[in-house]
Picture (cartoon, rainbow, N blue to C red):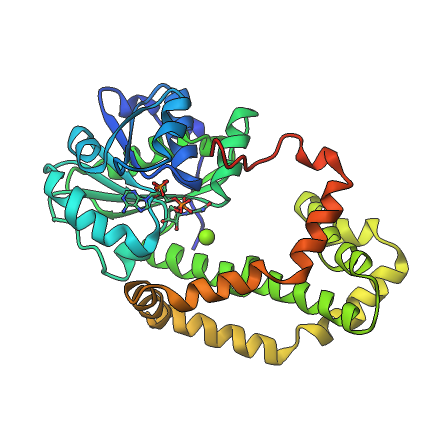
Length: 340
Ligand code: NDP
Ligand code: MG
């Protein structure tokens, strides 16, 4: 099946004229959606809890902020950039009672709609615009006149123009500069979860940690281990990002390349792939979704403990020390916790 990719020329931002867009939540995605859409000339209101410390950050960026229910009530298009594990509860209490027939309900990830945790009324349009990058990058790229490629998908379309509204929204985020790829909720949800678990976050961090620990356990200096197995990952990935694996292999030494092609497949082998298939199947059957929802409903104790264990790994302290020696890393940071 040929992939449908849309660009700015295929999207009509004018579709959002006269419409108010509520961005619920102002975290990684929310701050980028709100600020990019506003800069694209869209009427935006941010919805947050009254006691949220984030309220001041959004107002500091010149945005209008209301309570979640008030923002949802005012808007024609409601984007829920809220944590996936709490979106359903917030939706039931504050959003659903404020949806009018013909409104548009939007998400940045298909999790709750695909797994049926949220079942919107039939007279409401439902679409997804899912940027294929962290929110801070979505904002930073927009400011530089670039965009992060995004996915668009329509779940239900009583008004008959939901794809056009979704494309306009994505273009307002800057995604039309890079490509807006049409998909469906199932495909986005399952591939997104798999990517972050097996490769991008889970697989990568486990690979780097194992490499780091191997060098430490063999008696090498922590700083050396950190540079080799963690810090330099970005430099290698930059080369792949720019021109694929061949571009990286062109740049590294023959020694590195020979080690790469002969040793890499011994680190990640058929057993690893079998476990990846297992992980994909847990996603497809809804087992992962159920586990994540139940974990959060029961207080998230295991999640907190695992998060803390990660934070307390000695390599994090070594990395912090090394970054102090490279002050330029602090310039133009993607994340400034006082603002975004
Ligand atoms: P964050 O955790 O960064 O932000 C969540 C926001 O929701 C915060 O502003 C938080 O407010 C607010 N919030 C949390 N609980 C409540 C509540 N009970 N009532 C009102 N507001 C609340 O989320 P992300 O941006 O990471 O994720 C948002 C969505 O985007 C998810 O669906 C995710 O899958 C998707 N996505 C995320 C990507 C990313 O880059 N992180 C990439 C692509 C998609 P407060 O500030 O008050 O805590
Ligand atoms: Mg993701």
